[in-house]
Amino acid sequence: MYTELLFVSKLFKPIFVDKGVRPIQHLRSTGCAAEVVATQKVTELQEGVFTSEIHVTPQHITHTHPVNARIWAAYAENRKTNNPEVIGMVCQFLDAGTAFRQLFKFVTYSSGKPVTFKDVRNLIQSIQSDLRKESMKIRVQNLLDEFVADEPGNVARICGNGASLATCVAFQTAGMRKLFSLFPEVVLVDSTHKTNDLWYKLFSFMVTDAFGKDQFAQRSFVDQETDANMSLAVETFQENNPEWTQVEVIMVDKDLTEIGVLEKIFPKARVLLCRFHVFKWFRQIKTDARFDLSRDVQNELLLRVRQMVYAKSASRYEETRNDLFQLLNDEYKKKCSHLVSMETTDGNGTDPFVEYFQANWESCTARWVEYTRSDNPHLGNHTNNCIESGWSKMKPDINVNTPLDQCIEVVLTLQMFKEKDFERQTNEFVNNFELMVLYHAIGETIHA
Image (cartoon, rainbow, N blue to C red):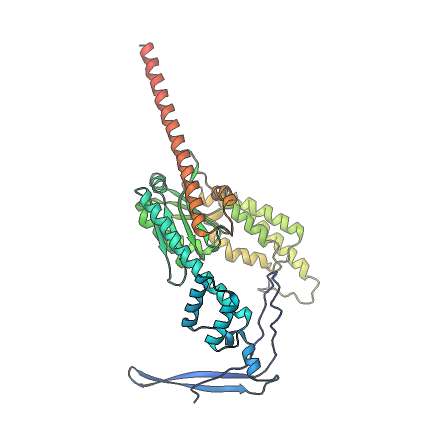
């Protein structure tokens, strides 16, 4: 039985995925075959009392390279300073503006590790990053507190896990809530990225007003598009808008996370796919190497997909789909005909794209084919392009270098202008209506 294990070799070679970024040049695999495999065995001595042992199974202790203290110190994790007292003192030195060489000497003597200039620079950058996040957290909290106090009806919520700034930051103006209460039947949902320096994604809800124009109903910043974060944003929306039960249609792109969360939290609403994103998805997938489609077949595929999307009846959809399947299967058999034995996924010459379509699109035609959704009150909304249009007006003022609090300020400022424009349109309509009623009354008086 072993109570302590010491590993002194890098036993694996990192797997690099090409992302267009040059890999680190000063690290390389040693190719050493030495390894120790340890297994923990837990035994129950009596009810509720356990003991554990570490057993070493296969092991190879012969190294193909020198093993000494110098090589051990060459690994960055062995030089890394984790002492909270040392890190706390470095924070104080940074606040005081201490020179880098003095910081380097302090870390070297205090940690007792053979740190390098690069190690200390990394430590400083890590501390400064944490300080920026903490400062940002305070600024965002103050901004939203001021926003909520500015007007009755404004609401905001910050949800965090304690380890970062927040996982979800959601907010609504009083005007947003009023618009949703008036027009809750159709909600458009989408997200965008590259809006702030923390890489939070902007997740938005939108409704259609009485003038046929689309208005934002909630804005949320999420650090990742996970089920948990999406649920937080949607649940916040429900808490602040009791009219959410009147939502009948939700328009989304083909994001499975969004669809799953929305169908769970809005069980009575119909989730539809944005036509633009359907076409976009097929334009991307048609060139996938898995399908090996020729240029002519790709063009024919897009034409048939468009016909299926706009199909007015089930028979028209099925006819177009069957024609597409026949075309793909015929082309697939031609490609395989020169082989001695044709290898296919199911042994009958089915094209891989046909199987992909049946598995991913055939089961959800109610979301993207015209005849299946014509009876829904979608108010003429078949895409989320109006949200994209709203983002295009916002993107010139924000980018990946914009601090999160400034990004929120820009979003709130643009929302204020949009609400003022809606108020102006409403007043013009009311005034014109009153004038029309007055003219009608005068005309009746004259002809009386």
